[in-house]
Structures are given as structure tokens and as C-alpha cells.
Image 1 (tube, rainbow, N blue to C red):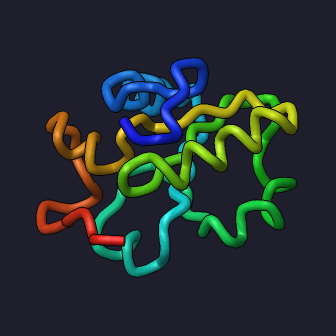
Image 2 (image 1 turned 90 degrees about the vertical axis):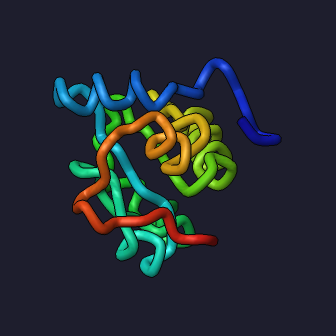
Length: 116
């Protein structure tokens, strides 16, 4: 985990997969469009980090939200900000790279984790 690791908001890829499978969370991919196009986690919603604040009102405050990026640093900062604003916000620890490293699927067989 990176510099922004926070055990109170970080969730493992396996836990995020469980919660996503049970439709218990909203998963938001905060990466750039080219990163998203290279490959993404099925069921995630894409809101670029720079647009996240302006789109906050579209995110259900009553539902836990997990934010994810490539390695977890950008999304950790966003999760901390959302948590401070009253959301039940979490970060996918290690980002989409940790997701892939855990053997969890991306949206298609030829998907890759793009460099940032």
C-alpha cells in the first residue's frame, strides 16, 4: 500500500469483490479515460478524479462507496475527502493493480492496467 494507506478506509481487493458481488457498494473508478479504456473492474462507475467533486451529488450518501485508481494513492485521497464529507467512503487498497494481482477479473480478457 502507498503513502496514503489508511486502515480505517482501505479495503482489500477480495473484500471489495465480495461487496460488489453482493451489490452492497458503489465502486467508482477515478482514473483517466485512457486508463479506464485499457481495462476496468466490471460493475464500476467511471468519474475522473478531476470531476469527482462536481459529481458528488450523484453518489448515494446512504450507500458505502469504494473509490479506486491504479495503485490506490489518488483514490485514497478522494476516499478521505468523501469520508470527511459524511460519506461511508473506502479505498480499494493497492488499486486496480492489486485487484489484478489477486486474480480478480477485468471487464474483458484482453484488458490491461494502463500506466498512469
